[in-house]
Amino acid sequence: MYLAHFGLNAAPFSLTPDTRCFFGVRSHVDAINTCMSAMEMGEGLVKVTGEVGTGKTMVCRLLVKALTDAFTLVFLPNPANTVASLHRMIADELGVDGALSQDKLLGAIQHAAIESARQEKPVVILCDEAQTLPDDVLEAIRLLGNLETEQQKLIQLIMLGQPELDERLSQHNMRQLLQRISFSARLAPLTFAEASAYIDHRIREQGASTRLFSVWAKRRIWVASHGIPRLMHQLCHKALLLSFGKGQKKVSSRAVRLAIKDTPLAKQHTMLQAMWG
Image (cartoon, rainbow, N blue to C red; front, side, top):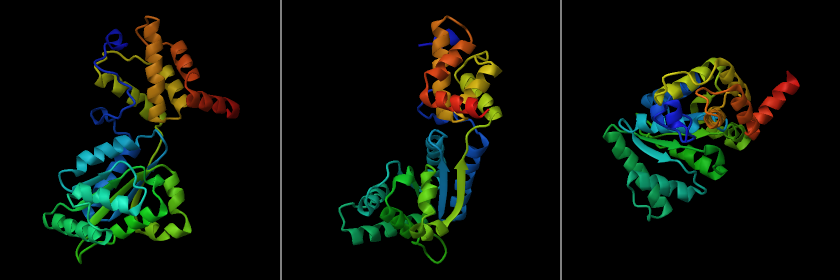
C-alpha cells in the first residue's frame, strides 16, 4: 500500500521470515554457528531456545539452507504427537517405507542412517517447536541419539523451542536427555544498537534511499517491543502505514505513538515501563 510512496521495492517488515533479508545480530549468529560447529564435530544434540518472536523460524530456515549440502537433513517443522508418528515422519524424510511395523521401521531408519554415514552425509534431524513434544517423544529423540557406530553418531539432532523447553528439560524425568545436550544457544531480544541497525537494514534491503525512521522513532519502537523482532515488525509496518495515510515522506512521532497504542503487547510493555520507571 505504501511501497511507491516511500520508494520501497517490497514490504520491509513482513511477518514472514525471509532469509534474503537476514541481519546477523549476535545471538542469532552465535546460535547458527553453535549448531553448525556441533554438527560438523558430530556432537549429537544441540538445543536452541528463544521467546516468541525472537527469530527462531528465521534461524531454523537458515540452518535448513546451511545443512542441506553437507548432511542428510530431516526437517520436522511440525512436532510429532506420538513416537510412532515421529518415526514415520523421519522415515518419510529418509525415503524409508513408513508402512513397516514399528520395530522394523526403527531398524530401517538405522540402516538408512548407516548408509548416509557411508556416503559422508550423516543424518541431522532439525526439530522445531520442540517445547510441545510429549515426554515419550522426547525420550524417543534421546534414543535416536544413541544410534552410533564405534566411530560416530549415526543421527544428530537440533531442537528449537520456546523457553518452556528449558522448563521441560529441567524436570527429573528428563535428566537423561538433558545430559545428552552437548551445546545450547539462546536467542535474545535485540539491544537498541541492534534494533536501530536492523530497522535501517530492512529498509535499505528494499530499496529506500533515505532513513524513514528517526533515532527517536527507533528508540520508541525498541522500548515498546522490548527488542522482539516480530513486535518491531508490527510497529514499523503500522507506523509506515499511518505516515503514508497522512502523505508524510518519513515516519512521524504521532504515527509511532498510534502504532504502539494499536498493538496490545507493545502497549502493555510501554505501560509497565512507565510504572516501573
